Image (cartoon, rainbow, N blue to C red; front, side, top):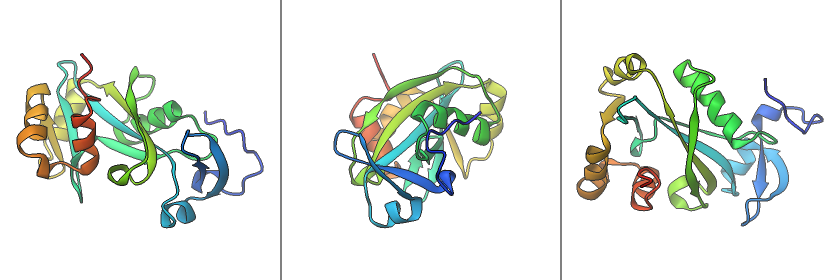
Length: 171
């Protein structure tokens, strides 16, 4: 159940909170206007993994990236949005998600405060998605580090930044 504190919004699913440099809400605007003007707002990225820790990357127009991502509608918590993406994109709810970190606005993440999450899914779900090799790539920890170190041009700017900053491999 989605609870949004801004009950007066005409279209809350298509409204975003514009935030300041401390990630505090300044105002609410239609998502199209926020994106067009490249105003800072909130988004989430989700990396799904199997029980062995293998991560499922998704091909985007910019290269291999997180499994899923999305903007956070006005008034919604980042964790709630990550759970919603887990349900909508991967058909699972109630699974344990873990926060990996926060990337401040920059060109690699579309000027968003990007909260990174990971979730473990059953091997069967991961394997079924990985079978679509044009859209998904299943990699273990060493392979992902190797991509970041030796084939960074194959990764999206966001994935490169997450690897370089150590968000994907908390030790």
